[in-house]
Each structure stands twice: as structure tokens, then as C-alpha cells.
Length: 159
Image 1 (cartoon, rainbow, N blue to C red):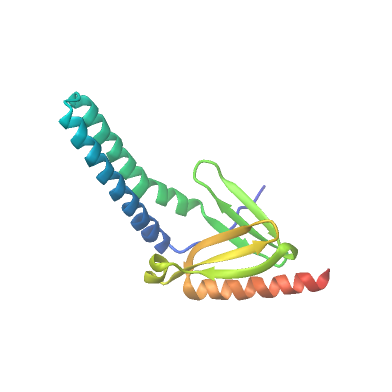
Image 2: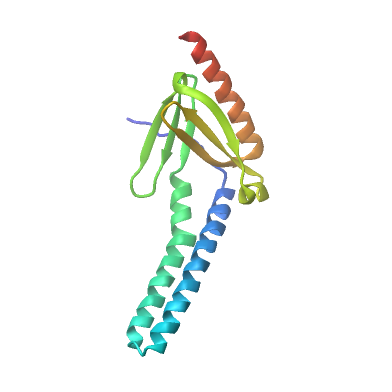
């Protein structure tokens, strides 16, 4: 039996992801309004305009409500002495194991939206790539950064 990681990211991530999606959807609606204006102006059949509005409504629902909820439910992580395990994905679940010995450095990142909700993301850097644990409470992110950094230092000394 394969155990999945147990720790979850902050539930406030939903708010941040939904607000971010709202901005994208607003831009999409503005572009759709421009297209609808020109379609109407050039006397395109009404069913095409209705279809465009229906597509925009579906896109809005998926972007703001469904995808952030599914994404949050699936996102999990665990930090162990020898490895970091990440699980993410909505339809295709991706599980990543990062050996502590491969960790080069750890950062915390906080953009304006995350800062507003007192969240931060932890970035774990290896020689090959960077892995992100998104939207943790600020204190939890800082504590996790220090913890991983200390474990990585110990792992380097073991080599």
C-alpha cells in the first residue's frame, strides 16, 4: 500500500488562487465583449454570440470554483529526514521525491497576493530544478525553510 503525503497547504490558498483566476477571467470577459461587439456589428448569427457567452460562463466556473478546489484537495507534502515528497495535480497526479542530499538551497517567496493573506511559498532548489510548496502560512513556511535547510546540511555532511 502506497501512502500519500499527509501535510496540506493553507486553505487560504483557495482564496489566492480564486482571486488570481478572477483577474484572468475578467480579462477574458473583456476580450469576449470586444469580440461580441464586432460579431454583432458584422451581423453574425446570434447563436454564435450565445455560444461564445456559454463558453465564457463555463470557463469562469472552471477557473474560479472547480479547478482551485480540486488543486487544493490534491496538493500535499511531507518532509522527512532523507527526502521531501510532493503530490500535486488535478486529473494527472504527480508525486515527486526529492532526496535531501540533492537539496542545494531553500527559499521562501511571497508575492503581493500571498503577502495580503499572510502566506508564503517554499522553493526547494536542486542542481536540476526548483520545486515549490505553495501557499503556506508565513510562520510555517519560514519554519519549513529552516528545517529543510538544516536537514540538507546534515545530508551534505554525511557524504
